[in-house]
Image 1 (tube, one colour):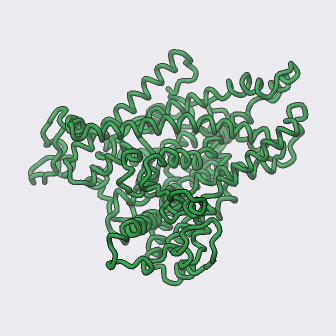
Image 2 (cartoon, one colour; image 1 turned 120 degrees about the vertical axis):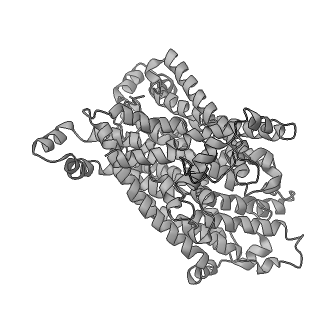
Image 3 (tube, rainbow over the protein chains, first blue to last red; image 1 turned 180 degrees about the horizontal axis):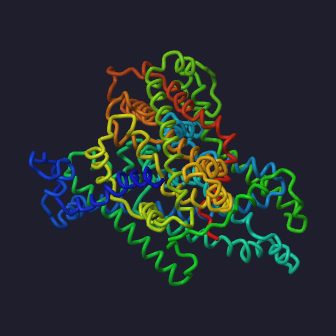
Length: 303
Length: 318
């Protein structure tokens, strides 16, 4: 019964794993000779390509490239940290507020609306950004009569952190709140009643009952998020700026950088080196975070 | 490694049930309740604004869009974009066909593969339980990276430039395996499975006739999430498809958006080469974006219940 899934995992997840060594090789695609044991072009080339040690990483840190590399790493990490913190706070807040609403019908309606954006693709969001923020966009139609200079988001670096943050909040808060809402509804009501009898207000109840119950879930999700800190929501970072070159410094993340190198003519070892950073450092980070959690609160560790 | 789970589904169902028992003592003060209601209401309106924006843009008449730009409330409405889209629409028709086919195929595959993979993991007597749980879980922590993935899918699996490229990479998910395993454990009593076995049903028959029907809410969640994942998927097409006849819907609308932006921004440099007013209609493109969202918005209210339930049974650690 596990066979079809196991084959899929083998092909799509395990087969690429040895590919991480490409980061340490000069990868050239060569046709295997007819008498070679391995006839597959990719595998043969992977094994036959010469080892070059850290040369590919050195390329990323050349004086001409180091600024770009550091900028993309900074973008990736900072955006991820921002989304982690803001996403956590807003999702928990939304879950608590929806739970406390007296009117059940409204709670359900609100929750449905907040959850809806999760099902809309980033490409459609890119259209919205265009309709709002392009030179002909709605924002300009509103501010122009007030005498402000027109804004064009595809040329405005400062705008992008806000656009990404808003887009991220918009798309994921409702979805993120579900798991917290589920946890809150599972907490024993009597705890709150006892606290209320003892004179604890809503805020005290939140900090002393709700929050401690949420901590295990929060820790679990944050461990996983830390492992993805060098990754990013590719579709969002790739499609929202729509290829605008002027704002690349604040919009490009490692994922997009790897992809654009992959599709350009640079040797494959370079994007492989950047991708190596993502997979290995991400993996190490998740192990470290988990180990720390395990030391302090063994019952909350992921594994 | 093992993620123990507390079934929260029942309580969340009860929570959303219409006439719940009064939580008198714990109820919010009326003022605070009104404040929250208004606050969340405003949040909802803000959430709906982006959807409103593209719908209204697609309903603006082309002439008023060219003259005044995008507006919150256009001076002149027109449904021409939609009549145009449905009358001619050849760019969209192929993409629509590809996306519908790959969504159907990918959804069926993922329900089967996830449902099958998760079941043995949920049974206490499966010998390789730990191994196969780890086999799936490990891929959530470590991956070969984009470059290796790109080479493997193109050079070894050779699924590029086919419909397979649009759904096969999304046809399985270790995350949903973990969720489904938990779903089986909490929603299908062990006694039911054992009595089926005693009555002589084979493992397969037990799974398909006893276990899966009991796990329909969970399987439906997997189905709906993978359907929406494939419907909205952009990356598979970007990475693995170079031929227009296999383009997916999202990829098609992305390239169209890219084209208008490029043309408009460079219009001054292209004076005489391209006439802006003769550009393929902007409202037409906005209508295209609306039409890709359409099926999801219509299906959403029906499935929302399942989403919430299926999700909450998942990774809640007890």
